[in-house]
Image (tube, rainbow, N blue to C red; front, side, top):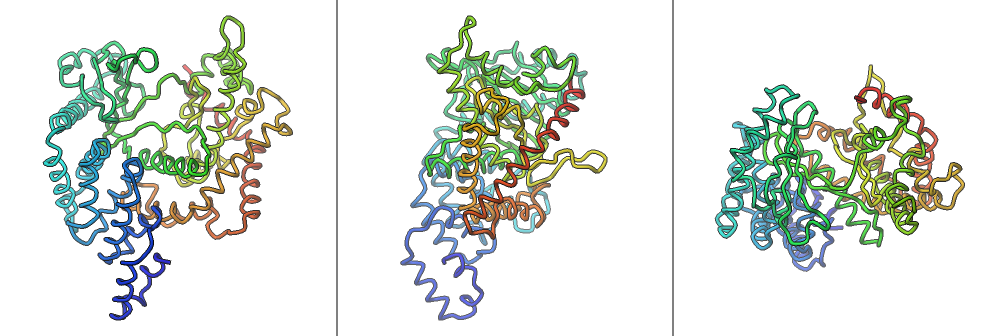
Length: 512
């Protein structure tokens, strides 16, 4: 109701009605987080309405939730009518109250500052600069640490630009030689991706230049924490110069929100949501998840790639089986736990990638952790923006669900479609989808807010229209919603051959 009233022209055409509306705001019951954030969208320009939303938001969200919604809240600063506003005050105050929130806030603001052009009619650069200065002045205790991170990012930017002019065959060797001179300023410091983690000594021998077009840097540090050798002995970060990581960050942040919604309903889909942090114009860092491999790496390690270039349908199940086997003896309990994690994570990513329209899925951006979790990386195409070859869509299914995966779900059975495990998996996907459908208004509002980021694939009405379709926005009957989702699901399972063909050509192109 509050969203309807706050957006109604009738309220603002009469002084009496407007005064009555303002009076209602003072006695309005506590808002939900979703509603409060939606009231900060561009279409709600009234400063009293925005202040009302901020008051409720400040009261209801803790620091963990603030971290979750920080990206859209920072973007909402663009919609404030004045440089000083209740939203700006709240963000700076909450950033100073919690170091982790403040750390992310600082880098988001700094990233935004690098994007503003000299032609800035709304003077947004001045607005964001004031907030950055206010935070830095109030954060004197950690200012040296932040400055050290900024210096490191500047050095890495210079290094990555220099490396691009060097032959790829010797780039890694040259990088390690150059890093020797800069080591002191790049170790024994908090991680820019997560201030709760400390980067110890730089492991020079493991630092290298990756072979992709932008030649990103992969860097490794020792983990100085006690007993880290038992679980996580190193920290690895990919530094990118030349790619806009804001779309990756937005996608992962929306997935975190989805994960939080699911967990409110006691649904844990075992998602692996790594950190991505833009730090300037087309520069940023990506956290490297340890103890995992891409499906293409798993495929290349198998003996059958060189002869057929196609992935054996039992390959993933056999890989998990081998991980759980020691001295030719299967650890059945470990195998069952890995399969459970695989099934839950597969269900979560099937639903999330379908709703968000994530495309360009192949063996190099699907990863499998040693504990069985499947996860996606590299979100360069979202909201149904398909990659095309000769004008033809390369992907013909709404999400990735091949027989390779379903054989793992069914514990290796070839005839999996009639199995209890397959039916349970199908139902798990449906339940996760219903939760997102229930919150469809919020996700639509969130992406409308994010249009101000200027992302190439989030600008037009057609981009938002994709979410209307995938979330069945106008559908209210539960059974109809389920029937429509099952129709999509069954179509993906039926046409898995098209994904297999795409993966075959990917293997041919990238096999060395």
